[in-house]
Length: 260
Image (cartoon, rainbow, N blue to C red; front, side, top):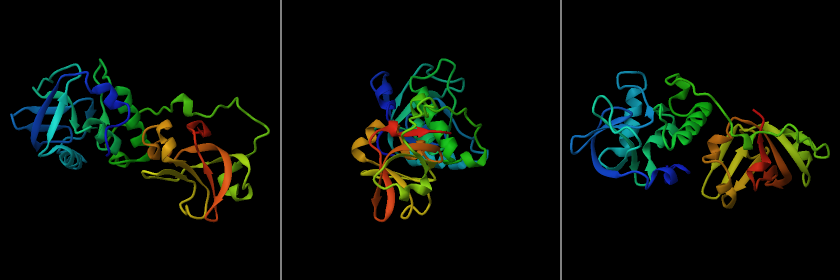
């Protein structure tokens, strides 16, 4: 994962005293040992124990992030648990490992009663990972989180605009050059350094797609390829023909409304 999850670094970096440690052993999906014999437990998340279903996979994923590397440990509230393990936010470079594991679906969120500075970000990542079935979520390893969609991305049912026609995604080839609303389920997504694409059919070369170019992506939710995947949406814009297929260029997240 490139860099830190958007919004988390700004909250965490610089607020807490940091320690730099070398990781010599990973014991589970949330715990490791450092070269000075400190046991560290990743704060705000949980994963199956090594003897439980999925536990060995979660440990292996954490190993890939931290084993043999120098990590930066940052506290947030409680210093240690009743087993003497340091409770820490763990950074490798600019990557917050706690959040990365949740994002990839190999950890769930368990916040302390007093909460965490980045707790909201972790919960949003968990909701998305669970909804799209990332990592271990399809195997009922974790308890399902409650799902909420930020209000700004929901469709405004009071905004009817009777002059603006609403069409199904599979009819868009009849509306080239017209401003319309298109309704459909995002069945697949693609993201590169240059573009983010929402596909409404698995045969993306022949069917409608919505396209966001890199210059506009900073306006959109973090990890839009996960956020919009498998959602029923309504997108508003002009239908254009590109390589014999209909597409719509999206410049602003307000053009994409989540229906369910």
